[in-house]
Image (tube, rainbow, N blue to C red):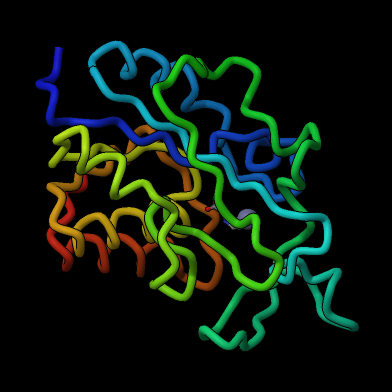
Length: 200
Ligand code: VGL
Ligand code: ZN
């Protein structure tokens, strides 16, 4: 059993990010058994859930003529326009049916129409908090292990924010899978390594 100051954070293990989903990550479903097993080791387990209104501005469908996976400029910076995914209350937003959901906390993110939220800690303006940092700090947690989807987006942003906030951050690559949009997978691995994140 891990010490009480370590938490496992399971990022966005939802149907829409698994094969057959709206924004499927290749082999996204294959990591579920390993994640379930790892939960046994941790005294603190947090799940995140991508949770968008149907008219979320990260959806290409909200921008006339925009193709999914194209880029746009938002007030907070560049933003990928995604296919509609993880719409609040839809089957695609539900956790993978085999994922253990007996976690301590579920953090929902991306629920404000105007702003996307990849990181478990901050929205994409890097300023609006999700509340996770306060939760972990109050529990005395100083080390976090990240697994889930997608390595190069939500896992990456969570790892970088976690390191910036002073956590000891580990990403278990065997229990994460990436989207890899224009080299984003290698770029994310390099950014995490440079930030002092342990890629295990
Ligand atoms: C994610 C794209 C859009 C993720 C969420 O979980 O990595 N990626 N929304
Ligand atoms: Zn999303």
